[in-house]
Length: 240
Ligand code: ZN
Image (cartoon, rainbow, N blue to C red):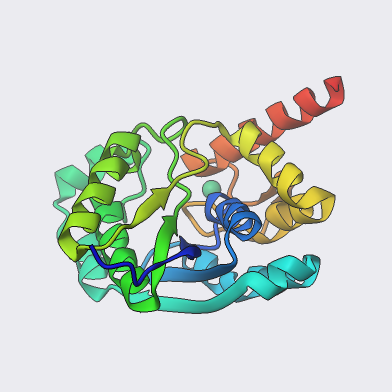
Protein backbone atom coordinates (compact mmCIF):
# COMPACT_ATOMS: atom_id res chain seq x y z
CA UNK A 1 0.00 0.00 0.00
CA UNK A 2 1.25 3.47 -0.86
CA UNK A 3 2.30 5.74 2.01
CA UNK A 4 1.79 9.00 0.16
CA UNK A 5 -1.15 10.11 2.26
CA UNK A 6 -0.44 12.10 5.38
CA UNK A 7 -1.58 10.98 8.80
CA UNK A 8 -1.51 14.64 9.80
CA UNK A 9 -3.86 15.84 7.10
CA UNK A 10 -7.66 15.62 7.25
CA UNK A 11 -10.51 16.58 4.94
CA UNK A 12 -13.78 17.55 6.66
CA UNK A 13 -17.17 17.20 4.97
CA UNK A 14 -18.35 20.68 5.83
CA UNK A 15 -21.87 21.78 4.94
CA UNK A 16 -22.04 24.78 7.27
CA UNK A 17 -24.60 23.02 9.45
CA UNK A 18 -24.29 22.56 13.19
CA UNK A 19 -22.91 19.01 13.11
CA UNK A 20 -20.29 19.55 10.44
CA UNK A 21 -19.14 22.80 12.10
CA UNK A 22 -18.56 21.01 15.42
CA UNK A 23 -16.86 18.26 13.44
CA UNK A 24 -14.54 20.83 11.86
CA UNK A 25 -13.55 22.13 15.31
CA UNK A 26 -12.93 18.54 16.40
CA UNK A 27 -10.60 17.99 13.42
CA UNK A 28 -8.78 21.31 13.98
CA UNK A 29 -7.93 20.17 17.52
CA UNK A 30 -6.45 16.92 16.22
CA UNK A 31 -4.80 17.33 12.84
CA UNK A 32 -1.94 19.57 11.70
CA UNK A 33 -3.64 20.43 8.42
CA UNK A 34 -7.38 20.47 7.82
CA UNK A 35 -9.17 21.16 4.53
CA UNK A 36 -12.92 21.34 3.97
CA UNK A 37 -15.27 20.22 1.23
CA UNK A 38 -18.88 21.23 0.58
CA UNK A 39 -21.31 19.64 -1.87
CA UNK A 40 -23.66 21.71 -3.94
CA UNK A 41 -26.56 19.50 -5.02
CA UNK A 42 -29.42 21.96 -5.23
CA UNK A 43 -30.45 21.48 -1.61
CA UNK A 44 -33.23 23.68 -0.38
CA UNK A 45 -31.13 24.79 2.56
CA UNK A 46 -28.62 26.34 0.16
CA UNK A 47 -28.34 29.05 2.83
CA UNK A 48 -26.29 26.50 4.74
CA UNK A 49 -23.67 26.41 1.99
CA UNK A 50 -23.48 30.19 1.80
CA UNK A 51 -22.58 30.38 5.50
CA UNK A 52 -19.52 28.18 5.07
CA UNK A 53 -16.96 30.88 4.24
CA UNK A 54 -18.13 33.05 7.13
CA UNK A 55 -17.94 30.19 9.63
CA UNK A 56 -14.44 29.26 8.46
CA UNK A 57 -13.32 32.89 8.79
CA UNK A 58 -14.72 33.26 12.28
CA UNK A 59 -13.20 29.96 13.40
CA UNK A 60 -9.77 30.98 12.07
CA UNK A 61 -10.04 34.26 13.96
CA UNK A 62 -10.95 32.46 17.18
CA UNK A 63 -7.78 30.48 17.87
CA UNK A 64 -4.30 30.97 16.40
CA UNK A 65 -3.75 27.20 16.13
CA UNK A 66 -7.02 26.79 14.24
CA UNK A 67 -5.94 29.53 11.84
CA UNK A 68 -2.57 27.85 11.30
CA UNK A 69 -4.17 24.48 10.61
CA UNK A 70 -7.13 25.47 8.48
CA UNK A 71 -6.34 24.89 4.81
CA UNK A 72 -8.19 25.18 1.54
CA UNK A 73 -11.93 24.96 1.05
CA UNK A 74 -13.32 22.94 -1.86
CA UNK A 75 -16.79 22.98 -3.37
CA UNK A 76 -18.00 20.08 -5.49
CA UNK A 77 -21.05 20.57 -7.67
CA UNK A 78 -23.13 17.43 -7.84
CA UNK A 79 -25.65 18.21 -10.55
CA UNK A 80 -26.60 14.57 -10.99
CA UNK A 81 -27.67 14.42 -7.36
CA UNK A 82 -29.60 17.66 -7.80
CA UNK A 83 -31.40 16.16 -10.78
CA UNK A 84 -32.22 13.06 -8.74
CA UNK A 85 -33.63 15.10 -5.88
CA UNK A 86 -35.73 17.32 -8.14
CA UNK A 87 -37.15 15.05 -10.79
CA UNK A 88 -36.81 11.40 -9.85
CA UNK A 89 -39.49 11.57 -7.21
CA UNK A 90 -42.97 10.19 -7.86
CA UNK A 91 -45.93 11.93 -6.24
CA UNK A 92 -46.69 9.01 -3.93
CA UNK A 93 -43.07 8.76 -2.90
CA UNK A 94 -42.94 12.51 -2.20
CA UNK A 95 -45.88 12.20 0.17
CA UNK A 96 -44.38 9.13 1.86
CA UNK A 97 -41.05 10.89 2.41
CA UNK A 98 -42.78 14.00 3.74
CA UNK A 99 -44.74 11.84 6.21
CA UNK A 100 -41.51 10.21 7.40
CA UNK A 101 -40.31 13.67 8.36
CA UNK A 102 -37.57 13.55 5.73
CA UNK A 103 -37.04 16.55 3.46
CA UNK A 104 -38.31 15.90 -0.07
CA UNK A 105 -34.82 16.74 -1.37
CA UNK A 106 -33.70 13.57 0.42
CA UNK A 107 -31.81 11.26 -1.92
CA UNK A 108 -31.28 7.69 -0.69
CA UNK A 109 -27.61 6.85 -0.24
CA UNK A 110 -26.62 10.50 -0.58
CA UNK A 111 -23.83 10.16 1.98
CA UNK A 112 -22.30 7.29 0.01
CA UNK A 113 -21.91 9.68 -2.92
CA UNK A 114 -20.47 12.42 -0.67
CA UNK A 115 -17.97 10.04 0.95
CA UNK A 116 -16.86 8.68 -2.43
CA UNK A 117 -16.17 12.18 -3.79
CA UNK A 118 -14.55 13.23 -0.50
CA UNK A 119 -12.39 10.09 -0.62
CA UNK A 120 -11.23 10.91 -4.15
CA UNK A 121 -10.50 14.51 -3.13
CA UNK A 122 -8.62 13.33 -0.02
CA UNK A 123 -6.49 11.13 -2.28
CA UNK A 124 -5.66 14.08 -4.56
CA UNK A 125 -4.90 16.29 -1.55
CA UNK A 126 -2.76 13.65 0.18
CA UNK A 127 -5.07 13.48 3.19
CA UNK A 128 -5.22 10.23 5.14
CA UNK A 129 -8.35 11.14 7.08
CA UNK A 130 -11.92 12.13 6.42
CA UNK A 131 -14.07 13.63 9.17
CA UNK A 132 -17.84 13.93 8.94
CA UNK A 133 -20.73 14.81 11.23
CA UNK A 134 -22.91 11.75 10.68
CA UNK A 135 -24.87 10.75 13.73
CA UNK A 136 -26.72 7.52 14.37
CA UNK A 137 -28.30 8.69 17.62
CA UNK A 138 -30.61 11.33 16.19
CA UNK A 139 -31.04 10.40 12.55
CA UNK A 140 -31.89 6.73 12.54
CA UNK A 141 -34.08 7.56 9.53
CA UNK A 142 -30.96 7.85 7.40
CA UNK A 143 -29.32 4.44 6.97
CA UNK A 144 -26.38 6.04 5.14
CA UNK A 145 -25.50 7.89 8.39
CA UNK A 146 -25.15 4.69 10.40
CA UNK A 147 -21.85 3.52 11.81
CA UNK A 148 -21.90 0.18 9.95
CA UNK A 149 -22.40 2.05 6.65
CA UNK A 150 -19.49 4.41 7.37
CA UNK A 151 -17.21 1.51 8.38
CA UNK A 152 -18.10 -0.30 5.14
CA UNK A 153 -17.34 2.87 3.14
CA UNK A 154 -13.98 3.21 4.87
CA UNK A 155 -13.10 -0.33 3.83
CA UNK A 156 -14.40 0.19 0.28
CA UNK A 157 -12.50 3.46 -0.21
CA UNK A 158 -9.27 2.07 1.28
CA UNK A 159 -9.46 -0.96 -1.01
CA UNK A 160 -10.72 0.91 -4.06
CA UNK A 161 -7.97 3.53 -3.93
CA UNK A 162 -5.30 1.27 -2.44
CA UNK A 163 -4.45 3.81 0.24
CA UNK A 164 -5.15 3.91 3.93
CA UNK A 165 -8.09 6.24 4.55
CA UNK A 166 -9.75 6.62 7.96
CA UNK A 167 -13.25 8.06 8.31
CA UNK A 168 -13.88 9.79 11.64
CA UNK A 169 -17.41 10.49 12.86
CA UNK A 170 -17.01 12.11 16.30
CA UNK A 171 -20.76 12.74 16.65
CA UNK A 172 -21.87 9.21 15.79
CA UNK A 173 -22.96 8.18 19.29
CA UNK A 174 -23.88 11.48 20.90
CA UNK A 175 -27.18 13.38 20.85
CA UNK A 176 -27.77 17.04 19.99
CA UNK A 177 -27.39 18.14 23.63
CA UNK A 178 -23.98 16.46 23.75
CA UNK A 179 -23.05 18.11 20.44
CA UNK A 180 -23.67 21.54 22.01
CA UNK A 181 -21.59 20.43 25.02
CA UNK A 182 -18.80 19.23 22.71
CA UNK A 183 -18.82 22.61 20.94
CA UNK A 184 -18.33 24.37 24.28
CA UNK A 185 -15.57 21.94 25.23
CA UNK A 186 -13.69 22.38 21.93
CA UNK A 187 -13.92 26.14 21.55
CA UNK A 188 -15.46 27.63 24.67
CA UNK A 189 -18.34 30.12 24.82
CA UNK A 190 -17.17 31.97 21.72
CA UNK A 191 -17.40 28.86 19.56
CA UNK A 192 -20.70 27.80 21.13
CA UNK A 193 -22.02 31.24 20.24
CA UNK A 194 -20.84 30.83 16.65
CA UNK A 195 -22.56 27.44 16.39
CA UNK A 196 -25.83 28.98 17.60
CA UNK A 197 -25.58 32.18 15.58
CA UNK A 198 -24.05 31.09 12.27
CA UNK A 199 -24.79 27.44 11.65
CA UNK A 200 -27.89 26.27 9.94
CA UNK A 201 -29.80 23.01 10.05
CA UNK A 202 -33.40 23.93 9.12
CA UNK A 203 -34.74 21.89 6.21
CA UNK A 204 -36.68 24.91 4.96
CA UNK A 205 -33.67 27.23 5.03
CA UNK A 206 -35.57 29.69 7.20
CA UNK A 207 -33.30 32.37 8.71
CA UNK A 208 -35.97 34.90 9.57
CA UNK A 209 -36.64 33.69 13.13
CA UNK A 210 -33.95 33.68 15.81
CA UNK A 211 -34.59 31.28 18.70
CA UNK A 212 -32.33 30.72 21.72
CA UNK A 213 -30.92 27.70 19.84
CA UNK A 214 -30.34 29.60 16.59
CA UNK A 215 -32.21 30.33 13.35
CA UNK A 216 -34.85 28.14 11.76
CA UNK A 217 -38.54 27.58 11.07
CA UNK A 218 -38.88 25.86 14.46
CA UNK A 219 -41.23 23.23 13.02
CA UNK A 220 -39.32 20.90 10.71
CA UNK A 221 -37.69 17.74 12.18
CA UNK A 222 -34.21 19.31 12.07
CA UNK A 223 -35.38 22.40 13.99
CA UNK A 224 -37.28 20.30 16.53
CA UNK A 225 -34.23 18.16 17.15
CA UNK A 226 -31.99 21.19 17.58
CA UNK A 227 -34.44 23.00 19.90
CA UNK A 228 -34.87 19.90 22.07
CA UNK A 229 -31.11 19.28 22.17
CA UNK A 230 -30.36 22.86 23.16
CA UNK A 231 -32.95 22.82 25.94
CA UNK A 232 -31.47 19.59 27.31
CA UNK A 233 -27.94 21.01 27.07
CA UNK A 234 -28.94 24.15 29.01
CA UNK A 235 -30.69 22.08 31.70
CA UNK A 236 -27.70 19.77 32.11
CA UNK A 237 -25.31 22.72 32.25
CA UNK A 238 -27.32 24.52 34.92
CA UNK A 239 -27.04 21.45 37.16
CA UNK A 240 -23.24 21.56 37.11
ZN1 ZN B 1 -36.76 24.18 10.27
